[in-house]
Amino acid sequence: MSGTRDPSLRAAVRGIGLLGPGLVDWSLGQALLRDPTGWAVAPTVLAAPALLPPAERRRAGAIVKLSMAVADQACTQAGVDPHTLATVFTASSGDAANCHALCEALASAERAVSPTRFTNSVHNAAAGYWHIATTSRAPSSSLCAHDASFGAGLLEALTQSIALGRAVLLVAGDVPYPEPLQGVRPLPDAFGAALLLDATPGAPSLATLTLALSAAPASGCGHAGLDALRTGVPAARCLPLLQALARGGPAVLVLDYLDGLSLDVRLEPPARP
Image (cartoon, rainbow, N blue to C red; front, side, top):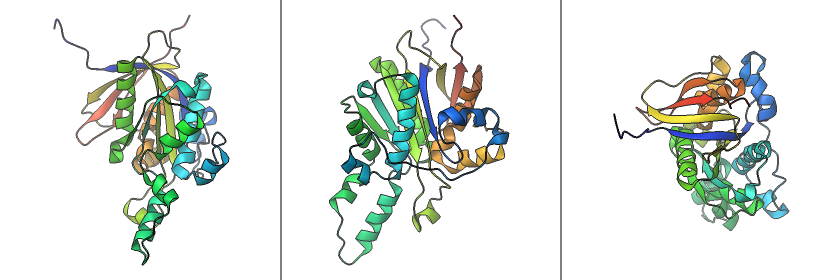
């Protein structure tokens, strides 16, 4: 129909970060995603972020370590200065251990909460540490949408890149709670991913991503272990997308989103010169 607007969102993928069980980074993880027969579950190892000053490094919790690791991978692969990047951080949980410690403090007789605990309790703590580390004053958003947190972050980052005409770094991550919260909200392990998205014309590209709302069922990974991880950790809902990116060809897939809605994703490889 004449005058009908295309409701899809489109941007280049310029960099990717990955860290999760048996997936130590994107460089090694993409081979395992291409052929999951070689993948084996191993605990996610979170290192102290070298980018942070010593004082902030000591205070960094698991969600900060996870988020900064995947963000740094995506920026390094794309060869961009993170100081210039707008960011979207998304997580269903936040700093889980800090939340547990706050609950313990509030349940005690003294009910005393340390200033450091309070500082790290905010949902944008990971974004704050990243922008401190990179000395960035670019815009940043932090989102939470329970199990739909990755989908919400992907929509937000694509929309911002198109509306603002600039690259946007999407960072998604979740870490397990200690007991007894883990029994109520069980997450098997920490998992994080980052995508550097750029809707500006002529942007360098590993692939072009087009996104639209759908009602179709979500795609799986074709591997029982990866699908258990995908459904067990909200941030890992991105695994079918990362698997398609790892395989490199054109792909059509569907990602989990809110109840009754999903995200239709189309990937196109970069044009050959």
